[in-house]
Length: 88
Image (cartoon, rainbow, N blue to C red; front, side, top):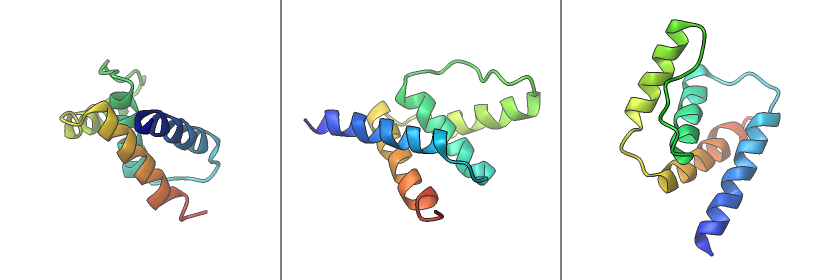
């Protein structure tokens, strides 16, 4: 039951970010990117056409590499709650 709630809360947080229309700090976006990828067990290389953006994304993934998918989901939710919803 707890796992279902985590997945539901994670999907809601992702939807909230996808529909968010204000500018967010780059460091926050990179953290969200990394935790989203880890939550989905997607460790593929970043696909930006800009090498510098790929480097920042790869670095964000490396910094969070030891996090489990469940912890990544929880951290993503916390970032949204503590840093995005408070701005609204």
